[in-house]
Each structure stands twice: as C-alpha cells, then as structure tokens.
Length: 171
Image 1 (cartoon, helix red, strand yellow):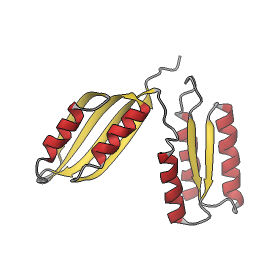
Image 2 (image 1 turned 180 degrees about the vertical axis):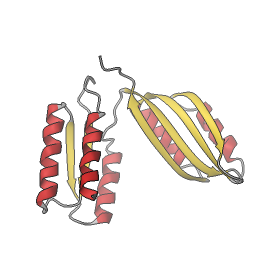
Image 3 (image 1 turned 90 degrees about the vertical axis):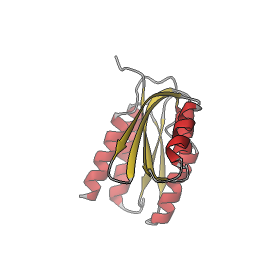
C-alpha cells in the first residue's frame, strides 16, 4: 500500500511540473534504499518520466535511515531544488495561538514589508485560541520561499506550510 502511494506521489509530482519553463525545473526524489529492486525500478521510472518531461531529477538514497532521509530532504530544500527565479503563486498557511503577544501584528507587518506581492490574507478562528492565517503571494520563486520561511519561523507560529504553482498557463 505504501509503495503504491509512493508511486502515485512521484507520478503526481512529475505531472504538475511546468513543461514550458525557460530552464528545465529540478525535482528531488528521496528513496528509502536503492538496495531493494522495487526502489530501483521506481527510480528508473521516475528518471524516464523526468527525461520525457524535460525535468532534471535528483535522486538521493537514504539507505533505510529515516534521519538520513530527513537530512537529505533538508539539503535538497537548502539547494533550492524545485525553485528558481521563475514567477510563482504561493499559498502560505500559518497556524498559531492568538494569545501570543502581538503575533498577529508582527505577521501583518512582515506581510507589508515582504519582497513579494501579498495578494490576499485570510484570518480564520479555528477555536477559542488557535488561528489559521492563509496568505496568497506572488513573485520570484526564491523570494516567495524566503518570505514564507521567515513567516513560518516567526516565534509563536506553531505550524506552517508553503504550496507553490507556476503562473504559466499551458497552451
């Protein structure tokens, strides 16, 4: 079951990569081990699909070590795999306790000073204490990731995510 979900995830990831970007995008794929024929087949299939779609694929082998896998994924993020200077639209979600002193004001101030366009912000009261802030941003991918990282790392934010997509329309 887990293997099937992994295959579906890889194929889904590769299917949403923009086909007409100026430079081929780079995608990272972390595998549990390349000592298992299943994962070797998965790597080979992902490489074939990436080649067909003109995508650079970086494959890392965690050698059945979850800590190593997490570290490799962090390295891919630090190397900005899957990012660049192309324009993207991003949705940043932040979960926080509204009782944290001035946190709402700090987050709003950061949005006003952001180096990307903040197109919209939605504040949702989840319960008596917890709030969800959903922010739509647009700009160069590296700047969008930088702004999201700063917002998510703000003291008092309990959880955060960034989801991006290209602004190009496939014709």
